[in-house]
Length: 488
Image (cartoon, rainbow, N blue to C red):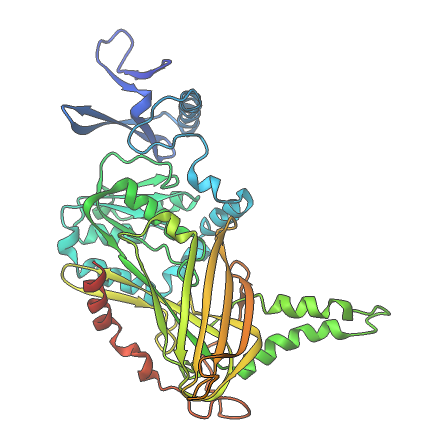
């Protein structure tokens, strides 16, 4: 077969002199790499307001020939894009897509490098809470997947795609931008009973074009505090580009849970790190001028670890993110007002956070939680520690705000303020008695990651600690069912 590239089209002739040929308009076609020497050409057409796709599988003689063809095609496509040609079906309007516009190149490079390594994929696969919950949510809701078109957004190793195929999916398109796409192809190829119904496509969801719309999106887009790494935005982009209007998303809802905590040991541990900079004669050098800066620096790091839920001094509140309806821009800045009634008298050292996601299956509704007291996941929990604790009494009102601003390093700057209000019936009721604020970078956490310890009730630890049942950890699936009915 001979391929002839023209200024507006590409033409495939079966053999020299033959009249049998396939012609594709460059404005509405896309080339997918199926393997080292195999590609898929897909073109979309519209006749009488009806859209349909046609495709052609190309088998190259070797990998070098395939690579040369891809390079020539992409170069011609780029030239047509730069000329302002109209590119339908969700093609990017320029060679630089929205992901590139909002992401530092260095951050993007490190991000895809990290997730392109099998050892990091193994870390996630061995999180049996994560993987097992996804498996159960998909297989138990096979009625949602049977004979449906599925898109696996940010497929990584590709593990979710076989789950969807096992549940009866008609076809699964696994979209992955990192080099892990090649490993995903090998993984799928090693499962012959499923690989005919799974296509791995290497590329960003902001760029690729699929041959058909999806009935269901599956993805694991969650980072620390749910939003770190900003993959949720790509999940929303995939929804807008690929999902049919009545389609489902697995997961469909995310919740960030937040509660004030008291942990004297953690506070002292962080504060003591800065003691190094109090040395007045370090090899003859006075370091003390940098102590204040170092002290603030250590408290700008959110702490990632697992903690005992009894350290919470008030029941948690939640911020809900409905993936089926939220707009991508709504995730650029998240503002959460905080209000609590302290259950104990304690020094409040900051705000503890965790998240869960909910799967709105037609048969079974599942919840994947990272809450303290539940089985630990690779996300652990996160705590924002304030450099200046505040004191509260039982029944005292705690107010504040968690303001999250996205930045180009694929993460967020966190602005936290907590205040203790005066209580009682006097003239000062409701007045602010103490306020403490902090600025933290979610991109640069302190990975403490210890298992929750049995803290003794000593020193200034709360004398009346919250019980785990106050968090309703054991009823997450029932709670998620009620919530899904509210938000869907």
